Length: 420
Ligand code: GLU
Image 1 (cartoon, rainbow, N blue to C red):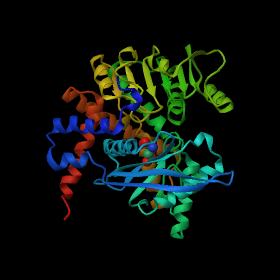
Image 2: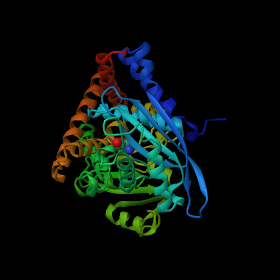
Image 3: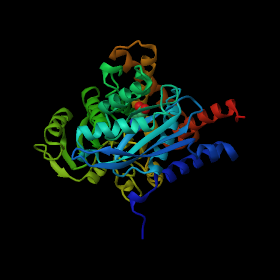
């Protein structure tokens, strides 16, 4: 029986990606082994009191993949399908992501197996506070700094910051990023992932010869990253947003949507589906929509060997983590589709997280224009670093980003040496 796409183990994918680049760079032996193993993993099982008075045990993980370049950094996701291998893969990707954009962090990730869509705010608060307490011994501004990810947000971060601060006896804003502004969050953090993605798409479009102004865009996953990328491509770069989707389905309109109106509709009804004047399409159809630019902004394993051949976009900006499986990368490379990999295309989020942490530690906060200007500088420079390697080595942009990132991590590991 063919392996179903959902059974693709993301950590196997992550290790394969390391092997490909380690082969290219001649990295072998112990160094290669370290790159394929998480440094530290913590699994916790903990009870949460539910609204009906009963209690339930939840399982969560925090994986710290590599801290050669600095404290670990990465989000926490709440999702029924969280697995330890998925968290390991995401922690590895955070390591390479921070190195690709050259911010002084290692990589980590957390996940709690739960269904946040069917939990009340009170239940989510109790779950978050207890999980924060369970992992408090391994997080902190100098060790590991969590942030939002799938189905967690600034409120989740506020609860973690408060729980950690209560345990310490003083406020520690730098323990998490993606906080509300009133608690030491950064201007621009909320839209940083989508904004960063729009910047690298713009840069790649110049090299590929695609016109973003008037060009067509399809967005799979109209959540935080996807909707912001759509808004910025539409507002600031004049693109036409022709297809969008969320977990309930997709919509299409040949002459384009105003993404702000779609956002309003989603806020009111809970989905983009049913947007007036749009043709209903499936979530998978969105990937295959005729468009110049495709932004996968949902979950992993969406672009596979099955549908890669049917993708018409010339540029794919991976706002999600891990949306393309390695077989699909090869097919797309043969078709001359430029895939801007997740560790570059969605690194705007962690970049502004870095700005937030730096502001918290200094107790000195920057205006929005400064945040966005510095974000743009980081994204443009990082795209340039990756594109240079892709051109020189004649490899696709994912491999090029891994070359840039893994070389930086290995340099830090080598110069530090092995303790003792
Ligand atoms: N969860 C986001 C990511 O995957 C942000 C991580 C962070 O800001 O630390 O990049």
